[in-house]
Length: 480
Ligand SMILES: Cc1cc2nc3c(=O)[nH]c(=O)nc-3n(C[C@H](O)[C@H](O)[C@H](O)COP(=O)(O)O)c2cc1C
Image 1 (tube, rainbow, N blue to C red):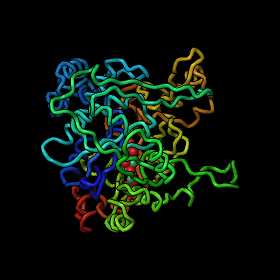
Image 2: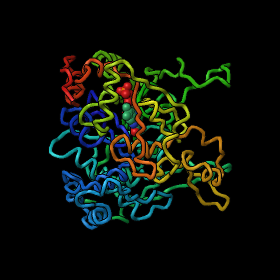
Image 3: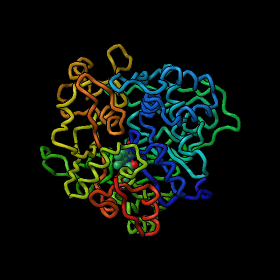
Image 4: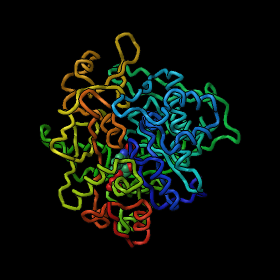
C-alpha cells in the first residue's frame, strides 16, 4: 500500500479534546497536507455542540449524510437543543463506555466520529486522519467504525502500544466482527479480557464499502516500533517518532541505571529516540516534537523521514478549537516572554507525564474544583473480586477510588483532564462551583509562533503555518 501512497510532508497532529477539530483539520487538508481530527471524547463534544444549538448547522448537516438515518435521528432527538441550552443549565451527559457496550453508547460513538471526519473532508479532495489514544480503549472500536464510514484516510495512535488496532482496521473494512484486548489492572493471573464489536449489529455496510485507512503508530522509541512490528495484528503503515517536548501526553522518562531512586523524574539523553533504528525498519516515518519549522522539516527529510508532525504551532492558530480567550492569553504571554510550560509527571490519570501551561496562579484547578468523574474516558479497568471488570479513575473523588480498591496515594495530584480539556475548548460543564476550569496542554516549541505574533497581533491561520513550513516565508499575525 505504501508504495502507491503520496505521503504528505506535514501532519498536523491530533490534539484532544477538540483542539484539532474539523475546522483545523480541513484547513490543513485543503493545503494538501494531512489534517488530523482528534477522536478523543468526540462523542461528548458532539453532544455538547448539539446542546449549544449547533448554531451554524454543521453537525446536523453531517448527520443528514450519515447512512443510517434512524440512528442519526435518535442522536438528534436526544441531544439537539434548538437555540441552545440556557448558559446556566448543565450539559446532558452521554453514557460512559464499558466492556459490554450499550447500544446508545456505541451509536453515539459511531455517529460523532462520522460527523467530525465528514466535516473535515467536506468539499475538497484532501486527506484527513483521526487520532486516538491506546490508553483509552473502551470507545475505540465504534469510534473507528464511524470515522471509516466517513472515509477517514489515516488512523494515528499513540499513548501506549496499539498492537490490536491494525487488525481491527482490516476487520472493519470487511465488515467483520472485531475484538480488542483490554488492559486490566489487578489481574495477577493475567486473564485475557476482550471487548467485542460487530458492525453488522448496528447496520448494513454502506454502499460501495468502506476503505481501510493507513495506520501510523506514534512512538517515543525504537523499542516501541519493534514491538509494533513483531506483535501488531495487521499492517502498520508508518511511524511518527515523537520526543518529550511534544504537547499532550509524553512517554515516561527511561530509568537511568545507578540514578537516585528518590530523585524527581527528569528526561535525559536516554530519552532521545534512535531515529536510525526506526528508519532501518524500512517504513515511512515522521518526526515530531519541536520539528515545526522549515529547517527542521529539511533536517527530518535528510534523516530519511517523509516529513514532520506538528502540534503546538497549529494549536493556537485561528481555526483550532481552543477558545479565543485562552489563545489570546497564551499568545500574549508568549509575546511578553512570560509563558510557563511544565511537564507534570503526576497530573494525568493515565500515569503518563503531561505537558501543562500555567495559565494563572489563581486558576489553580485542583483547588477550584470539586472532584467529580462524569466523563470517565481515563478510567482504568481492574479485576473485581467477583471476576467482573470495574472502572476507576485516580482523579475521581478519593473515597470512590479507595472504595474500588485504589490507594489514596494513587489519587495524589491527579487532575480531571476530561473536564478540564472540555473547558479549554469552551464546552466546560456547569457546576455549582462555576464552570469547569480549563486545563491547557501545550508543547514546548513556540519558536515559530514567536515569529508570527507580536503584542496585540495574535491571529494567524493554519494556512500561514503550512506556507511557512513549505516556503520559509511568513506572514505576520493580524490584530485580535
Ligand atoms: C494541545 C495539544 C494536544 C495534544 N493532544 C494529543 C492527543 O490527543 N493525541 C496525540 O497523539 N497527541 C497529542 N498531542 C501531540 C501532537 O499531536 C504533536 O505530536 C506534538 O504536539 C508535536 O510536537 P510540537 O507541539 O512540538 O509540534 C497534542 C499536542 C498539543 C499541543
